[in-house]
Image 1 (cartoon, chains in turn yellow, blue):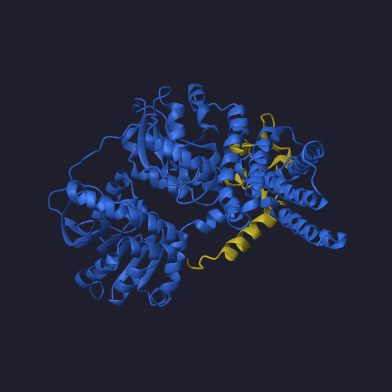
Image 2 (cartoon, rainbow over the protein chains, first blue to last red; image 1 turned 45 degrees about the vertical axis):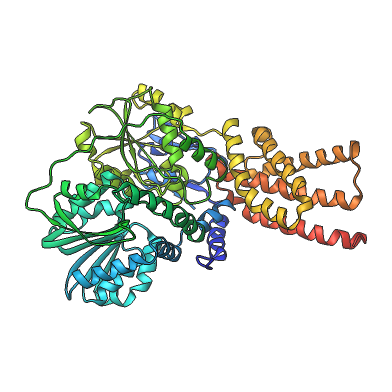
Length: 83
Length: 538
């Protein structure tokens, strides 16, 4: 069999992902939040809860977060970052 | 580790080219030469749908044509870009990352003299084929030609038999060498006629199983032919049993079993029935059908997720807003239902940008429950999701299933070499691996630690305790052999604990553990090598 795409290249690429994945954390700016709650809709773990009175989302249980990025992608206000 | 091997096993662009060469016994090249010789002149404006690595693109550009090539695969397109650098700089070739179903929207009307496509249509569902063909009628300039080279199932039954007999070993061989496979078109002539073309077959090779269709716009417009929307029922057949069996052990080895994309009916849906979207992994579609058949009347839109489950496909960039948009547009949902609400699986929200789908299609996006089994209750509650429907769990049944999947893969990866090179250790390693894995699956929720790596610490302790109790009571081992067992079981426990983590959305991907797995592996290696030297066993 041919050498491409190269097991080592693939390993190296995933090593980069691996290095980041363990330390990725949610950074949430409540100032930007307008209470759309897509984060709550899509989080498979339950790290987000809507605060209906103040119309903002609350991020809790950061240690449970699996860093899937769903809330980041679906937030229309760009209030969430994963880094 | 599984992720790396999945990626590595995926067909690379070069493998794909070799695979196609082998599958068509080199005849596709012959067809491409005929296309260039007979249809391409200086200045011909060409749209190539599915340019792949750009072999035909380069041949047409060399003939003086101005070629726009599109392809849905970033890897293929990158290869084509490298190959066609000078042509792109000189403005002879333009490459775009695009799904075939989107061509109608993205190019001006009547802007191409020739539209050419090789081995693309056979990858599309019948709905998508018709949609792309109709889009091409508006893109062709007066007198323009549509050229489609593809594999076809021979119409006569005897040649069809020969076709399958010759094809089967060839398909197997090609897959083994290059992980490439293709499917074949059926009854394409009538589809061309229905879509408003008159067609001829100027080139036919391999007893009519590889042909070139030349199609021109016919004076009579296409008959507004609407194929009936296929109905899906939950059925257990020999085929589904075999696919299930394969998937139970080897689902992470490509190519993944795919379901034809397109719109389907479950039950007896009408114009008000909800529309659910899902990916085209065969198991996913069948599990959705099983959960809904007899419980709800719905439309199921199967979009292209590269044959991967929605969570992994969305996470890996295979299931995107673009794929959902393409499915919505090519399925003519607008004509089938009277509302504009899509229900997407919640577990694809990590890759499908809901806002892009909303903006580009005008359809509303609702995130459905995480599990198919909750869909009937979710629909009955008028799309209200409880927290239980929203949050993923990893119950015993799923843990047992996923442990079996990991065992299938690592069985091949670890046990096969052990069987070949270290036969005497085959059964001990097999029994430890299988026993440890299922034990872990059962006790997983009760082991302390949030992730797989931390859970592997108590798992290791339990395994070692078991080993010591067994050897003390039943089978006393000499110190050297006990030492080997301790090192081996520790390694296996850490590996088992850490790797299952990637098999459920309740934890981060197993890659998060690699750093520590590497460190622990190196440390164990060192201990295995140094201890006997220090104690004078070797």
